[in-house]
Length: 157
Image (cartoon, rainbow, N blue to C red; front, top):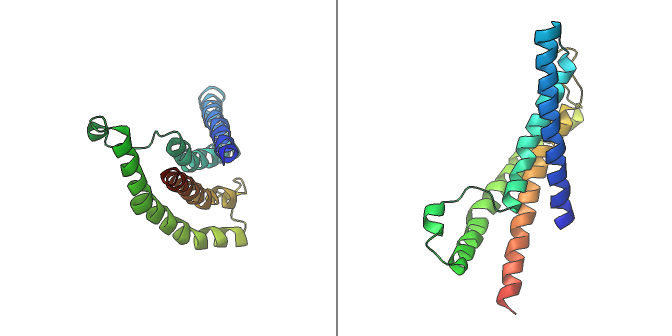
């Protein structure tokens, strides 16, 4: 599992560079040279959408997701771990399970028609970006299950 999360982290770094350099190129071309390419704008949009979706699991895996730290800092590590487990079990798993279930028809129909850019002359491959709507919840669910299974193993040692 660690290899999957490290790969996603690396992909997010590449996507970040793509968004930054692509947007810089768009601005320079538009304001210095007076023209632009729709394909570059689509590539930046696709990279940004993918980055937003995939960075959720990077934050989740690194423990950088949103918490109410005002309370957490007063409690010991055992209490915080139990709260994290309850959050995984009662919040993350159901929410991301529903997201996976709800996104599947959208992604499936996008793959059936091999959906591309809504702009005339834009890039093909929007269906690949929409696939991130399935990858995101699947990875979060795997991460939560991994943590919960680890907690159960630890409890029975």
